[in-house]
Length: 245
Image 1 (cartoon, rainbow, N blue to C red):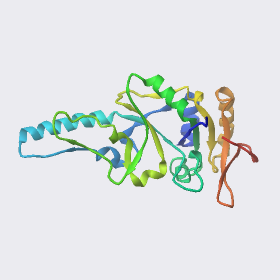
Image 2: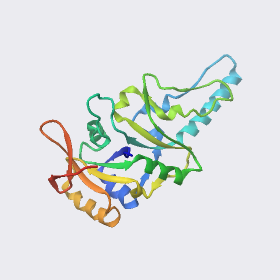
Image 3: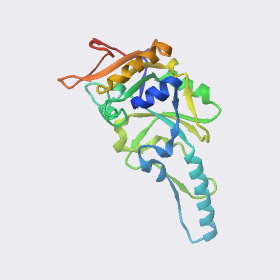
Image 4: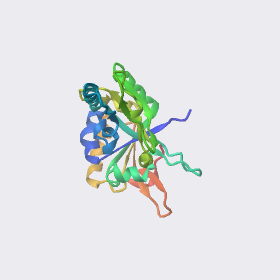
């Protein structure tokens, strides 16, 4: 059965100083996501003439806001299947390389989706967990506080406006968590480390050293752009040696 891949893009600094030495990925607060409206727009109160009910509803809004503020997530890109002629692999997404891979100076970690999701569930199974693809809509859903039954709606976590659809995002979320959270031992699900075409030469020796210490079975590749407009992968030190994930 073919392995389904997901990719996590980041900077060289975070990859070399944080992710690889600790063999882990850190969850970040959803409210700090790249879309400033993703969190802030989602919780609303229906104002009414009953001043006491209005204050109670506003209090519930504050409680729900506190709840949502502690949702933590890690984002990944999946393959783009929207083109009819050929899919775009998750580690060849040009906009992701530009926006999250520091304009090809960064790193893309390529994971076995099923293996990483299993690590996530096994390590954090006592929390409320979400592991789903993000949906992209004209008007993502929100929460309108109407009465005391108003409660958590997971759609708020997995819906974004359609202009973000280029990310093809798969999201792992923990709900809620006041503590720092990580997925540990990611080498168990990591298939390849892909560096950008503009990756600083001075950092390559750091990657090779880290690979020898704990990631010896992981492929280490560099992505390039050829004159015909196609991305291709090579071994980190030699463009003539192809790298296949």
